[in-house]
Image (cartoon, rainbow, N blue to C red; front, side, top):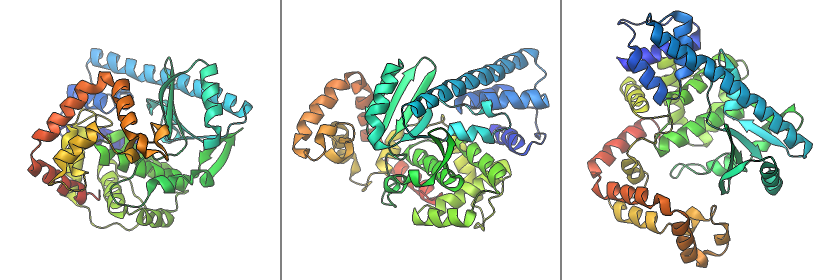
Length: 389
């Protein structure tokens, strides 16, 4: 029942119509699901708008989430725009993606939560950005190509020199495709740029595909796309988008995504779609609600084995790679390896020493891989292929 009620609320949110349910709203389960999906402000907004609950304590708590999100995200926006002006003063071109612009598609922009704000910069500005962030009091959280992150209080930024840090099996080269992002930059304010609408939509779809392929993509990512189609349809060239999806070998997934958004949120994509695989879309919804926004709470052993080239013989190889990853897999982090793969044993030592606190987690992961039933992997593989991944 929670799947029906949760998607009914999100459809109401997208379409601005009263939500419908055959049973009384299960507020306890809705709050649990919304918290897991990082969407409590949306639930709180729906409750405020449509009076879902008559329990004054529930309403008081949800109102707190609603007002807290509005104030917190407004402060995040102001902090970012202050930082953006600093980038402009220092002559650094930058292009926010995802949340900063997607929030404008929401009925109340501050209801679009985000853990970080993502920005694309030119590679040649990397050192300049690093020095600026340190001078402004930010601490380094992650420092390897192509993503660098900085944190200060409630502020958290991911600075990218490429919007995509990996590929999906043997499909088109996503990293190369999104390396051309600056071709699609449009002026916004000072040296801040925004991505062109078609390109940003394609990136949002591919970003979801990357997370789903790697283990988790929460309903908020699908909601972003539904609101994109609902509010930006006049600016989207769906014929062009379909061509690009075909070039990226993601047509099957794109069709699944469009049909899922139609089923869950009532949106139309403006292009010809195959008949929906209703069973697969229902399973996708259950799979999505079964974990958190990025799938961190999911058992990743099945996923890692499925994504290995040979599932039948992958266990030993995957465990070896966890212990001793190949140079190509880690050279973006340990840059002294680039062009000097003979230093790989040194990188293994540096990696082990710098990640001592993660060793228990990695041992647990290796144990999970060793114990995973291959039949589970095959079942998961069939599901992912069915949805186009």
